[in-house]
Amino acid sequence: MAGIKALVGLSFSGAIGLTFLLLGCGLEQYGVYWPLFVLIFYVLSPIPTFIARRVSDDDSTSNACRELAYFLTTGIVVSAFGLPIVLARTTTIQWGACGLVMTGNAIIFLTILGFFIVFGGSDDFSWEQW
Image 1 (cartoon, helix red, strand yellow):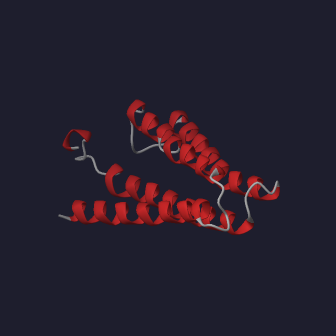
Image 2: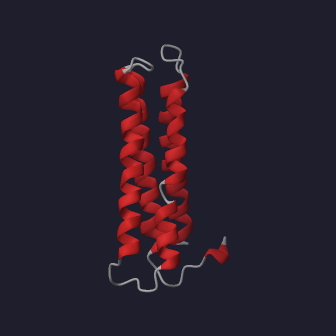
Image 3: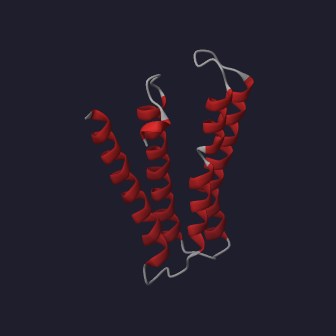
């Protein structure tokens, strides 16, 4: 039952994060949908960690594959926070929209981290239950 509560909480926080992202795009005074390109970063960010966990044999120690995955994930997350700033500096979007997108980024990436903490750490977890 604890897994269901965690899943509901993670889905709720993901919905809140996407709401901030869509508010940054769809409010009448902003009205530009360029910030939706951060959705690409949301999809790409867990992929290196998924691959590293699948390839690596040992979960207790650090290895080069896992460290490379953490490095790539960090680069993706930093890029997701940098894109709205670059768009705001070039006046493609307004600074208010940038703030809403950055808030949505923080919530979404904390949701992804929460998913890895809740569902990725236990040995009895398998993807077959999905």
